Image (cartoon, rainbow, N blue to C red; front, side):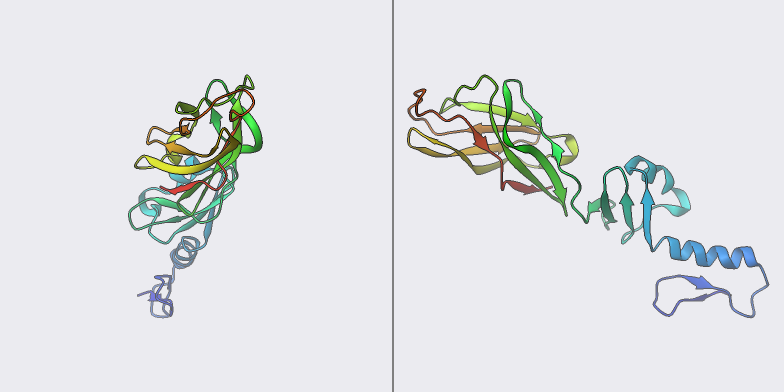
Length: 200
């Protein structure tokens, strides 16, 4: 009867009293160890295709996804949780919105979605105060489970120093600034996402 490793990890090795069977003996050791290493896959789809049946993922398993450039851990609730920050991905901007600076994008790290960059109107006009402006949309895997409301930086103008960014469960990102003067000279020309983050 195979024996278990001394560390309680369930890796078995053959006992001297076992019937000689090198394939079974080595298979038990190899499979026992591989499942406890960092498993490497081309992407999340390749991982899902490989980890099924007797090799289905278990809590505590760690994988590295090449395409996503990310380490994930399998949690007790059956989800994969990112352990390392994936690459920054460009934000899908709404019609009429363009980059002002800072490469607007989003990134997932340990269950937290972070945003960055500054946005402006494509036509160079100001963001009218007291109005809801749609800035962009997050993909489904990066959306909050409840609507989020955050204080956000804006260009100083007409006595307005801040705005409110809404990140909705639909993935839509809006900005709203308090009512105020909207003259061409003093109007706000950009709004920022830097420092905004939320948990999934």
